[in-house]
Amino acid sequence: MATTYTTKAGDTWDAIAYAVYGSEKYIGHLMQNNFPLLDRFVFEADVNLNTPALPESTQQSAGLPAWRA
Image 1 (spheres, one colour):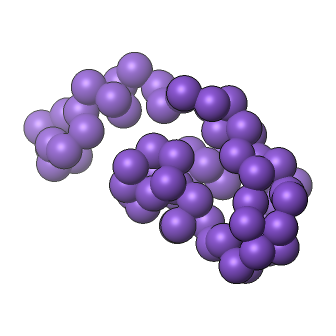
Image 2 (cartoon, rainbow, N blue to C red):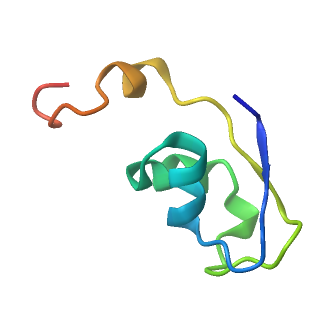
């Protein structure tokens, strides 16, 4: 998995999370790793975001309800 994502004009946090991690539910992980950019909702082109791999515990419990994870 790539460790960065370069935005296209009009990208949003949820769309980027879906493109990188396969689900909008990882938006929090994406935002935590790009704290200086939290004031943006819609991105202009060519902004580089950090996209580290999901933590192991998150990957293993993907698709399970929180009480089962």
